[in-house]
Image 1 (cartoon, rainbow, N blue to C red):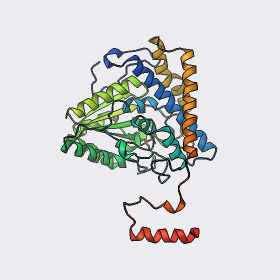
Image 2 (image 1 turned 90 degrees about the horizontal axis):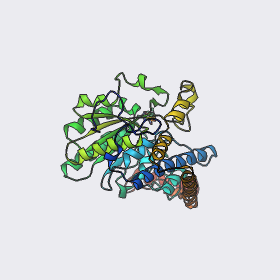
Image 3 (image 1 turned 180 degrees about the vertical axis):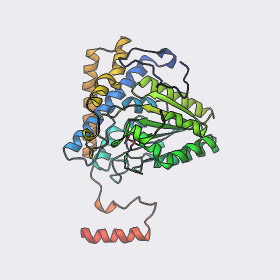
Image 4 (image 1 turned 180 degrees about the horizontal axis):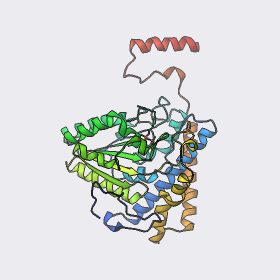
Length: 365
Ligand SMILES: Cc1ncc(C[n+]2csc(CCOP(=O)(O)OP(=O)(O)O)c2C)c(N)n1
């Protein structure tokens, strides 16, 4: 299929029931690739479910679920390479784990342990890993967009073969940073993929209250950039469109905006009550008729690559891996209280020294 920008309907490779609606062979994915992709979807949801339980048990303070958006996150991260940069937002842990963040590190981040690459110092939206070219996701909505575009501008100037992907939600498109980032990305022909996970809500604000354009993808036109609308619950479509944009950026043909049309199952975060703003039946419809994991599983079954026995074995395997990762995180110590100000800057400033003394006096150490 020729991947085209500015389509009226989302690009898809699979029907909702998993039957191929386009030639999937052209993606060049092997059986092993398909099986790995499916495992990643199932694993991401298992980690998500476990984190939600940790919050309910009072062991973790805050969590933003990715359930429902796994295909968007896994499909968009798989075409990237080690030298590429990834800027996540507060809901992109599925992509961070594909880039190389370990599940044990993610759990440690949720629990504020030393195994967390940010050592318990950030709101649990995600840690960074310098060695993976992955800055810590920002809590400030849209903030990462200008940073990501700046990184891609540097990649262009330095003639690096790396590209940058930046994740954000539909709500972030109302921030000034989005518009500044889009403009600079296009003007400087930056190798960046601006990946909008349109899950149709920014907390309680519905998409139609957020923007009056029919799609988010079409906003790219105003900046002289291509915008792609993709079915974000179709793993193969998200993979194909992101790969297309990654290849384009690597070939020096500039940035792209991708709108991945999806739906979040959980509340905005563990501090939200989504029953107050979702219409009755909407969530159930997405869960039962458009689930990205079920869709890909049905695709595998249609290709005679999956059955009940394989599913059972996979679930046992994933459960064990999640339990092991969580156990590793829990075995890691909590950070020493007196280190709380470390790493605010490369070195202690006079102000930080003063705060440190105050803290020591407070703690009596
Ligand atoms: C600048 C700024 N404004 C408001 C907030 C509070 N806030 C956190 S997430 C969020 C909604 C973001 O919605 P969206 O961008 O669609 O992403 P989603 O949460 O749906 O993944 C808001 C308003 C914030 N963190 N930063």
